[in-house]
Image (cartoon, rainbow, N blue to C red; front, top):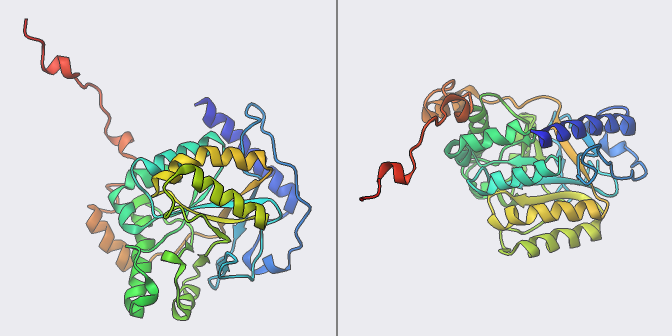
Amino acid sequence: MRAAAVCAIAISMSVASASWAQNAPVKALTLAATTPAPAAMPIAYPGNPDSLGVARTVEIDTTGGPGFGFEHFKAYDFLRDGEVVLTFDDGPWPGNTPAVLKALAAQCTKALFFPIGKHAMWHPEILKQVAAAGHTIGSHTWSHLDLSKLPLAQAEEEIEKGVSAVRVTLGQPEAPFFRFPDLRHSPELLAYLGTRNIGIFSTDMDSFDFRIHKPEQVIASIMTKLKKNGKGIVLMHDFQHATSLALPELLVQLKANGYRIVQVKAKEPVTTLAAYDQQLEKELGGGTANSRLISSVVRTINEPNFNDRFPAIR
């Protein structure tokens, strides 16, 4: 409870700092004309001076489907030197995603999550924890297929089912942000997302944590690339166990090296398609039945231990 209160103070201060630094939210259509401001000193929060926090919050207008991340899109360079956007793909997943959330909460900082639709439906309670913690949530298709190899109609269905899965799982629409599986896309799909006003996130640096199985190697991969680039949108996976183990130390190193976290939010929530919402509501068992956290509906009030159930023979 105390940690949550400290983080609440941190978030409030970071928003005030963002207002001081920018005077207005960042809009996607004006990012290219924005001149980077001088790097600010990392923010120290009362009661938790060692936390990484959130240095700045930006708002993105996704009209027309703008793209972000220099690996594929170079029009909107909205990060200042030393600024980092933490992103996580492929969740939610038991064990790993909760560990990622715990590490982020310990540092009073925020990230952008791109869940797979099927995973959201399998583990709705975990995705609700992501939302409850105040992180931004986009989508990452229904089943993580390579959309560039699919017929256009099937690829569009993969996108829409993924978007609707997040809405049905949470009971509300989230951000109109999307990341292609393996970052593979086609001109036709970029155009389609433009008509849907869904922003597309590539990356500035890929941790390649899906290939790395040691936490220290995940940390080294990210810190080496950040040192070279100076800033960036970082791609990680809350699906990967090594990443969940690496994150606490990674956040400490980001703080120690003067990097500052930027949280990305959307101007408007995503608009889902009713046909897919209805389809997935049936799969989940009804659109309203899962609108509350399981812990707020069902709680254990008595659970005999092993000795109670199997008393020792005397």
